[in-house]
Image 1 (cartoon, rainbow, N blue to C red):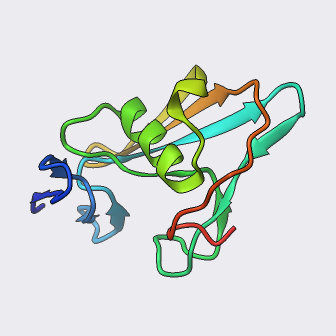
Image 2 (image 1 turned 90 degrees about the vertical axis):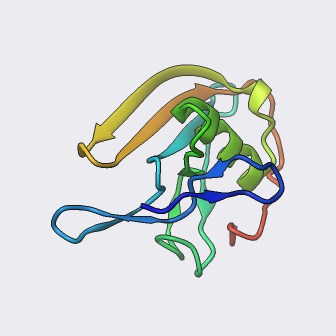
Length: 128
């Protein structure tokens, strides 16, 4: 694993591939996290179609990505959700979490609720 510094924040970036013991590759030098966001009023969930150039590009899923070296899984999941969809992190009420831990890499999914209906603002990592 090689550590890089994000030039905009001067903090340890988690961007990068990590190779497992059997040669499998996972995105996120410090693991990764995402957020499954549900609006109970509208009965809608927030999903994104990943841009083709990203990990698992062209697929639909929850927003998320690499955790930076100085943040918790929750902070990383909410930061990535805000970056990729424009959903302000402070509007999310986290209800539960589910972690898959491979020993050398982990992915944490947070389940959260929002009360407001928001129109996503996509970044370059999102096709839709």
